[in-house]
Image (spheres, rainbow, N blue to C red):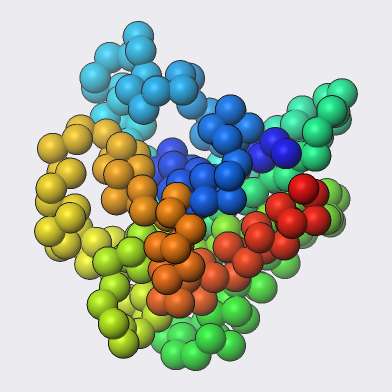
Length: 232
């Protein structure tokens, strides 16, 4: 099975790729479609350092507009799905919800229950399907991160009896305060930091434990499990 990823940033893609590894999906079968990665390496050869820094800084501000534009134009979807196929293909669409009001999704303020998280997730999915004109139904998986992708990564560092990380108002700040984050801060590229911090998602047992600390992560992981089971 080949999987394409349309996401807000490279950091998000690397986290998702680590999750996919736990389902024995090989690196060569995972394609970064938005944003594209010019090289399979985390360091892009031939770019000036300033250009690389600017690219990573985009993760801080988010780029949901690029995801929206790709869905509405359908360009990466047509290219990915309509080429001659020899294997099953699935597209993952990733969005954070902290900016959902900017793309006309009513936010669930102060979510406190799993039902609140799922309602928020469903509202974003409905908007994505609207952008796509309800095309490609059945070929899509939705990585909808309540608040920010950082909340997903935090599940790997949660302590026993800790509540859902989606309850954390500013998960990016929480992640940045961790000792683990400070140990990888020397990496200039943010996407490299997230790749390292989320590395344990590739371990089946650790992923199984992590999803108990975030409902939106659990919803995504379970959707991947169903899809891979039905296409294997």
